[in-house]
Image (cartoon, rainbow, N blue to C red):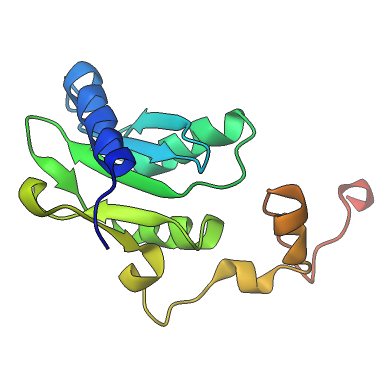
Length: 157
């Protein structure tokens, strides 16, 4: 796949956030995610010895707070000019589960390319496969909460 102008702009957005907000050991990576209608949401990682959230997950949360149900592209950029960084395994799984058609921008700065997240996790478990009504995602734009077979209503506690 080739980079679009909107993909380059997404990299620029994440790079700008990394330069502006990643100035300590607590925040070392910035991410930017784009919706199909062009809205961009950013986030930074929240480092903590207990394993704080990655920048990609924070950007997803920022989009969710604005009611976004689908993202089409995401990129993470490291601080101190480290360039575009690939998502960790946990982020790859989250991206696949929540946005199975999302493209992840990867590669060296002179050869960036959007890659379907499914290519980053071939033959993987897909949490969405466990949903009762996957068509609800299309109708509402939101992922339904998983149903745990042995759970009972909170009122029975």
